[in-house]
Image 1: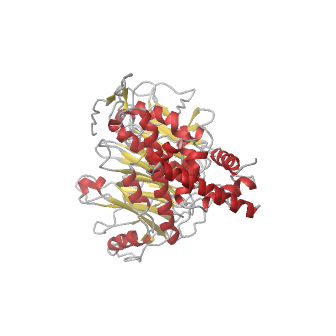
Image 2: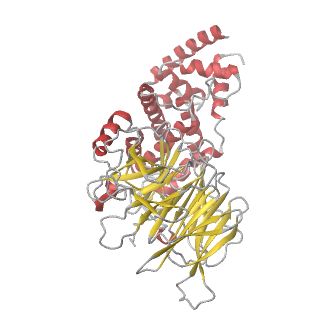
Image 3: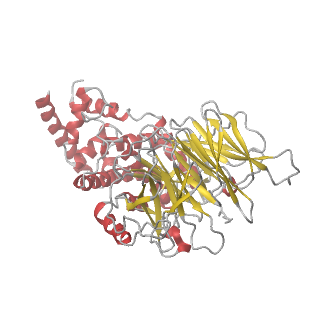
Length: 183
Length: 421
């Protein structure tokens, strides 16, 4: 029988002070604090729960690895947002490639094929959002679901604050136009 | 609801709430590092088929007399329609233990009624040496895994591919062809499948996880090729059995508790587990039965554990789970009070039934023997194999009707490890 010897658990102390915590404890606490919100915003970006779960699991794995590089707890949330946005982009890119192979995936929660959302108006709103380009979709989800500031959105997306602001303005105008036509 | 911003917030909130709060907690078990997982998940048609075909050129199904099988050089295929049967299967697959010095223990087909050897699935010269197999519900189709790698000693660095084995009406292997499914990193050593083959679960030994001895649990949707994988909450946990329920939503696995390490430096997330200790668990319980309930869309694990209270652990106890996931069957070594067995020995092998909801355990039957035990469920019957003796092991095989608890011995097929039926 193979014997396995475990090294001691790594402990972290944030530079600002506080108690030492193991990486697992920190990751678990961060998951408790942010897991659901990240899962839900990932759903809004990729459309289906299974993909959203994959994105969030990957994001937390990345966070676990990145803990030694993060200098303060507040940065963990920002790291997660960036990871979820990037992971969602990756899912959508992969999905486009998969579509060429006719690989199926779960329909978005706002699609007619999905029975998850019953309200027609809400589905119409989200379907209209889904037709927007990638960046406006990300800006709207971070702003109107996570209620992030434009500065926080800019950091999550790697763009300037003014880009976030102008993107949101144009996206809202486009949505208003489309939804009036649809209604 | 007057502005577009209000409507947007409202729609986002409604969509987000389709994920209930408990879903986050259910994201337990640590997934495999992304790079590896993606490599497996999206290695489909072109690249995978090319790679598979390179291997497949050498595939042969060697019948008992050493004749090449009919599917040599076959291209990768889909699983095809499977029509599950309510009757117990007529054949089972088992590894023939050939003892020390053998090249490999060949996977072979046996009659479930007579125990007679029908044919070896692969011979020593075959390029395909299956290490794991899972029966589908029609009684004649099996999924088998074959690992190719840099060397037999480093199988965990290799790649496993899945094949479809079909038996003819007389039990002879009719075809062994590669499935057009993603390759799986590592050495797949345990397989389980839903009766229709729609979902496959596997355990794969991989080399590059933070600790040696870790394994990866994976679930693959055979219609889409979609794979989800998790590593175990603790390194050193050696999964020794898997059983997937018919609806693909409950996975029962067994680990060897004596390999669990409680403190480690991992790169992955802690598991969120819910312990389910059977109310009537007795001292002397051996092994650990763990059920992973794959909730909702069949992916999210919540572990339920059943483990020994007295600290005495033995590596026995494969588990099988019913179609609806509500009942788990497992082997448990128990003391033979009629003998003067040594304290470390048990002497008897009980097949137990664990009701997941009620957390109660009952004994279906107790067999004589204290070696390895094998279980496989088909059509309401358990195929039970008990291997006795360390130096000259012999297998005893039985069919156990779970409802009536009737036991039917299967004539001795020799020294085999029954795998699936």
